[in-house]
Image (cartoon, rainbow, N blue to C red):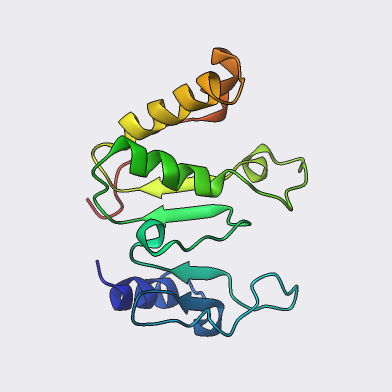
Length: 145
């Protein structure tokens, strides 16, 4: 998966307007002049290649998708942690809107989700049943396969 292919898919198949997509990679720095915290900011989708290594962060991301084959449980845990902040979240009647979503295409994702659950219990004071309810890991079929 390349940045170009992903962006084209978002435009053609998900009907996302090009001006709502920004690319933030080592070579393309479209976010350098954009204030994501501005309520009038049109950007809704950000494509990045190695956000963790680049030190990039978006504190109000609610959906994160990764097509990288992430190798370690620690990297997966850090990636999942990026999506859990949700500072502007408000409780909604539709339960599906009360969650953050991370879609990761890695065979080690389950391991990372378990590591995150362990961290919630061991380092953040959650009870095991609370942590298990917060992190829901599912293996979904890939569209088109």
